Length: 328
Image 1: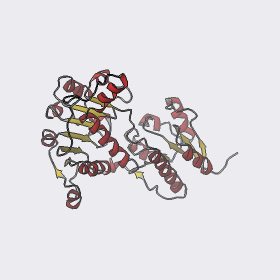
Image 2: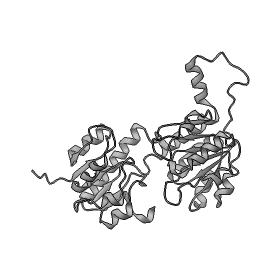
Image 3: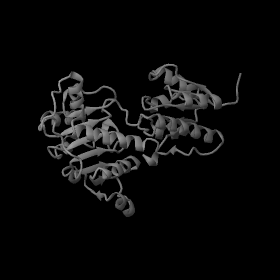
Image 4: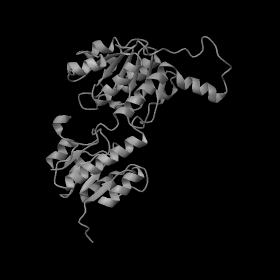
């Protein structure tokens, strides 16, 4: 029997409170297990749902959208990144796309600092010694790392997350530098005492730490390529909590193996969960499983934004977090 409510398909398990609220508001089909949908399941979803709620693990490309039924009117993405969605193709078919911006800025910035400290202070090596029972006591030259105070931090992408990283890094006494598609207003630069570099090459060659905080777009694919990685100082550290595709991962491995880069802290990888095995074996590399935004508070806020976007659309208004191709 038709319920008169929107038909919503959710592609992954979401926090229980979010799923409960969705069941109250919509005719929702939830994911029973926490695995990505197969292509056939995604196809069936776009053929029949009014609203699709995907995540970064779902490839919503032009071929999939070509199978969408006329009733599909909104893709309400659970997450801020939308590089897995062909937004232009969606709009051509009259399908709106929304996301959840701003929710994870603080969480991601926290993880950026955590990875930076973990690499610079060799924290995983210390933890491993403790777990193995190999620590025999304090020694003047054991596990010597580097302080972050006074070091130059180059932020690649000075949006919400980049600015949140700058705020935290300043509290650690770091000097803030940044490269961005557009220069920030003077008052924002003054707030962080930030120095703008029009040339990424020049900035990269002078920084002690580089933090990747830009989205993945065609123009940022392999932005940190082999040539640019060669510009980094020998003791520089590269941190990435954005998208793995921004770095040429094979080139990074070669530089790390040769000792030409001080270290790396990576939360994202060029080929998703397929991590280059060589990265796992390098002592100056800290890896985390794409968990920069993984806080209870953040995941609930993301769900709330998804629900607001769907409800606003259902009420006949523009979703507050509508994504348009010109934003990309």
